[in-house]
Image (cartoon, rainbow, N blue to C red):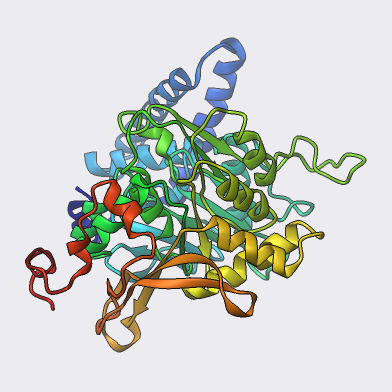
Length: 466
C-alpha cells in the first residue's frame, strides 16, 4: 500500500492550468460579499451548506463573466479554465488559496515559501522544484496566512505584529508554520503527511527497514518495550512511530499526545477504535497572574492527565521540552509499551538529549538522577539516518541505521547499551548482537533466527543484498 503511494512521487508534476489571478481575486471579493449577505439572512447555515452555497455563487459569477465577454466580443474561458478559476476562487474562500493545489497533490511532501515569490515544492522522490508565486505580494501572503489562521485551525489562531509566530494543523492533517515581523520577508513551511495507514511491512517495501528488523520491532511492540525513535528533521520518525502503532492489537486502549496532531491514529478507527488523542493548546494572547496564556494546555499536563484515562500505553509524538520528565516517569513506572520521537544525531546521543530535557523541565533533577531514570525507562532506541546525495546527482534515502537496547546504568554514570542492529556496509541496520532481553521477544513469538545473518530466511528477505 505505502510503496504504491510512494511511486506517485516518481512521476513529473503535471502541468497546472494558467489561472488569471487578478480575475480570481475580483471573483472572490464578489462571491465573498454575496455569501456574507446570504449568511446574515440565514445565520444557522452549517459549514457544508455554506460551501455548497459558495460554489453556486462562484458558478453564477463565472456565468455572468462569460455572458459579459460574449456580449463584448471578447475571448471566453474554456471549460477547463472555468473549472480552474472556480476551484481557485473556492480555495481562496475556504482553503489555502494558491497553495491548495500543492496540498491536494499526493506527490508533495513539503511546501516552502521565502516571501510570496520564492516558493519551493519538495516531492516524495527527493526533487525540490521552484514554482510560481503564491500571492501578489508579501503583504498579500500575510493576509492569506491570517485568513487561514482564523478559519482553518481547530481553534482560532492569530498572526499579527504582537503574535508573529504561527504553528497550526490544517484540515488534511498537514502542519503549517509561518513567521512574520522577526524575518525580512514572511516565511512559510507546510509539511504534509502523505502516508498514514502504514505498517512495518509497508516500510520494508519502501526500503526504510529490512525484514529482520521489521520482525524484531513487531516483537518489541508485542513485548511492551518502551521505544524512542530518533533522527533528524524530516527523517521519517513520525512515519515509523505510526507504523509501530499499527502493529498494536485493535482492542488496546492507547493515548497519543502531540503538540499538533501528526500521528492521526484516531483517523484510523478500524485499526485504533480505542485511541485517546490529546492535542496541546496554545491559549490566547492574554496571560493570567501566573504568566501563562489563558486557556493554554501543555504537553506536560496532557502526559500527566493521560494516566487517569485508563490507557495502557502513552505515545508522545515528539519530545521537545519539559514534557520529557513526566514521559520518562510514565515509561519507568507504567506497564511498558510507550513510545516517542526525538531529534538526535544518533541512538547514543538520544540519552544526552533526554537527560538534558529532563533536567530542563525539573530543576531538582540532577544529572545522575536523569540518566538513571532514562536508563531504567527506555528499552530500545531506533535511529533513522537520512543520506542526501542530490547535490552530487544522487538520491535522498531514509532508512533505519541503528537499534540499541538499554541495559540499565553502566560505567561513568551513563546507560549501558547493546547494539542489536548496527549500520552495515550500505549504512542500513543489520543484525549485530542478541539483545540481553532476548527471552522477552521470543516469548511473544520472535524467531531468533532473524538475528542470524546466515539463516536462509534472512538471505531471502534481504533479496540477496548480503
